[in-house]
Amino acid sequence: MHHGFIRDYGGDVLIIPLLYTFIRMFWVEDNKVTILYLPLGLFLFGVCIELLQGANLIDILKIGRKSVLGVIIGSTCDWKDILCYLAGTALILSWNYKSLLNPQKLRGFL
Image 1: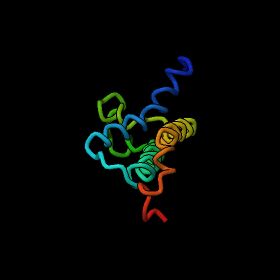
Image 2 (image 1 turned 135 degrees about the vertical axis):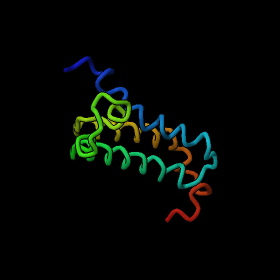
Image 3 (image 1 turned 90 degrees about the horizontal axis):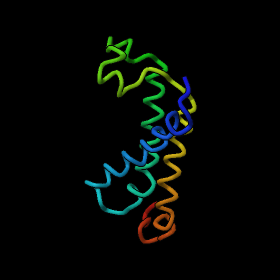
Image 4 (image 1 turned 180 degrees about the vertical axis):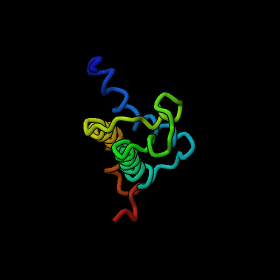
């Protein structure tokens, strides 16, 4: 069922920046971890969730599809969601672009 571009994909694009912003509320230091590794880690987290959806995790754990936990985990694996997570990660990295170019913030990066 398709509801439109924003309804189908907007939330998937915005979930990674939302999680990033939530974590940054508590972890305010700008360094290589928060500027580069945190967005990439959140992308990998989203990919793992999609793979668990593909493995029917909620059926394996006998969680109801309409329960709160079932809705949070999700029940349908779609590769387009992974592309949306990648777009959300790209939004964060583009927002942090100036910080990525500042060598003092990335000291010890390589």
